[in-house]
Length: 204
Image 1 (cartoon, rainbow, N blue to C red):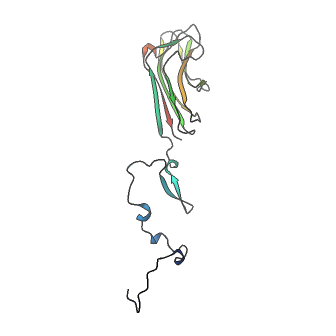
Image 2 (cartoon, rainbow, N blue to C red):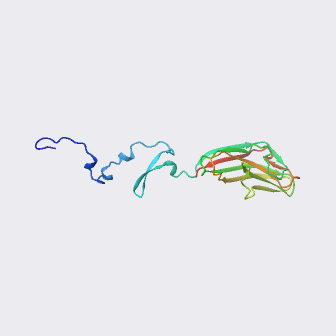
Image 3 (cartoon, rainbow, N blue to C red):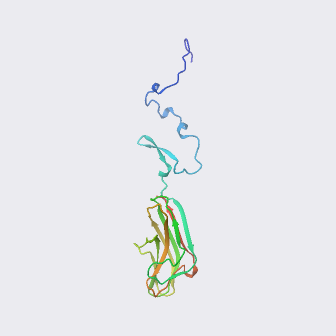
């Protein structure tokens, strides 16, 4: 640009030279905010998004966006030894169907999956299989799983239970069983079949 007389000396622009709110989105290129690089993997929990909260631009951690229902960890155990009991109280019968899991958040839930072949030796007696967390029968409200019948009456048991320990301390889950009468023998992992317990931490 041509000037009459001496060319003005360049002076840096200061905040006082710009009226409030005069610069808006029409004056800013898209790449100034969005950037050129794209994530190659899922965002980490500490990554941040920009979000408009009633017109106010705020940062939001990725951990707060969705994420509910994700499987955060899985632990499992199996037992291939036939276990027996004549006890009318729940016993472990020294079986190895036990897992330890430490929830990463108090809001997490633990999905417990149990399966085993079972057998009851006497007619009109039954056996019951349940899950304990620590020293508590967490299926006591619905009676666990049971099989009724006479001699040579066997089958399979499958339990799916969603627990809410509300803790970040280590939790121990184990399978226990009992019979309805001491004259009858209850079998777990009948005929040395494989019994299993799986614990999955589900994010809130």
